[in-house]
Image (cartoon, rainbow, N blue to C red; front, side):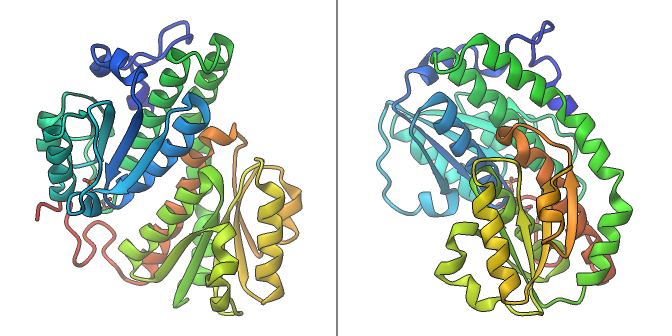
Length: 346
Ligand code: F1P
């Protein structure tokens, strides 16, 4: 995340500089709509961006799997800005969807990790995540780097569109600059995360719930567990639980609830009560010092407090580690999971 910031936050921390977008930013400011495309983890990062851009920059955003978008007949207008997110920059579905958007006159942007990759070369402009080489096939630091770039983008856009003032931008920059240190403090808690993984390593299913900015984190936590430990896991918007997944809850089901001190807090508390009433096991990701959830959860992953708009960058980290330890304990190869490829080029 520190590398992703490098050179992108002005020295006096009062502005965000996205060098690759300078020439096209006036067009982005005028966009009627922003469409964000990706696959897998990159799609989850896009969801975080949707919430950020709509809340702060007030531009309509659509997020779609590139693998769907490329085959249906979506409406794309010349006033649209289409952003592709891809760690590898080679994902065939994302590349094909982007080509289609380009042919239909949209401004196309890329957020990729691999410099000079196919998606990066196709786009009109873009931002590299500079997350370094991802060794494992399943995206982890790519996710936090993508969300970091998208957060910078959303706040920059909000400022340029006059939706937030200079002081608010400065406050957000301060929040973001504090993230790397906070992530380090979460990583130091790995022995605790490992101990919790030991308790749940033999579960057959797991459910992940979150609301708002933490809904995509729930999806991502579940995907990491599936990808590297082969444990079946589902991520849901917590408000959807009563519309189906609640039927799964019994004393064999670990339910990971991702929370923060945000507007959804009370709703998350009632979701936890609903799970506990059905004897489910709650693993809660909570802000440090949140004693309210401490008494309700079976296990806790504490993360430092932050503004809710950046909480996804912190709350995802214990879930990545949790998946990692469960995978190791189940004898899985965490770097080369079966059936997965680093670049899905077909
Ligand atoms: C997309 C993706 C990853 C996933 C795995 C397979 O890749 O679905 O999110 O973890 O590596 O590919 P990309 O377009 O971000 O390179």
